Amino acid sequence: MYRSFTVTGVTFHLYSIMMVLGALAFLGIFAGLTFYRHRGNGAENAFALGMLAIAMAAALPAAMVFDALFKIAENGGKFILKGATFYGGVLCGLALWPLLLLCWRRRKVALYERFADVAVGIPLGHCLGRIGCFLGGCCFGAPTSGPLGVVFPEGSAPYKFYGGPVAIHPTQLYEAAALLVIFAILFLFGKKHAFPLYCMLYGVTRFVIECFRADDRGAIFGLPLSPAQIISIALILLGEILWLTYLVRERRKLRTS
Image (cartoon, rainbow, N blue to C red; front, side, top):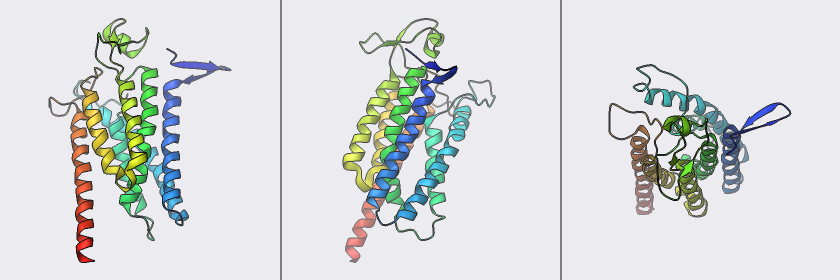
C-alpha cells in the first residue's frame, strides 16, 4: 500500500491528494447542478458558489476544533489540535454558508433548493476523502476474521495501534461504498429534497459504521455512544423535520390557493 510518492524531490501524500480531489468533485457537482437547475440566475449562482468556497475554507479549522473537543478526556484534559473530524467541518460549513447567502438581497432561489444542490455533491466528495483515509491508514476499524479484513503495513496507524499486523475492518472503504450509493440516490432521485434525504441516509450510515471503528472516537459527557453517533441521530432528526416542514407548507399552500 503506497501512502505517498516522490516526484523530482517533492513528496505527495495520497491522503492529501484524495482530499483535494474530493473538494473539487464536491464543488464541481454543486456548480453543475446549480447553474443547470437555476438557469437565468447566473450572478446569484456565482455568488452562491463563491460563498460555498469560503464556507469550505472555514470548515477545515472547525473540523480540527471539533476533534480536539471530543478528545479532551483522552488527552488528559488538554485541548490539542492534531486531527480532524468530518462532522465538525460539514456542520460549520452548512451553518456558515446560508448566512453568507443572505448577503445577496435579490434572492430568487430559496435556501431549501440551494441546500438540495449542495447536498448531492457532499457524499461524492466525502467518498473520495474516505478513500484517502484508507490510503493514509486513519479512521480504521476493529479486528475481524472475516473475508473483508485488511492488514495495514508497518508504520501505519493501525499497525502501531494493534502492535503488529492485524486484519481489521476496512471501515473507510465501507463508508466510501455507502457514500457512493447515497450520491447515486441523491443525484437520480433527490431533486429538491436532496438535503433532508442526505441527512437521513448519511446519519444512518455513519451510526452503523461507528460500530466497526476502533480508532480513538472521543467522548461527550461519558455517554456510551460516540460523538459521531450522537451527531448522526441529530442529523437524522434534522432531515425528518426539514422534510415534514416542507410537506406541511406545501399542503397549506394548496389549501389557500
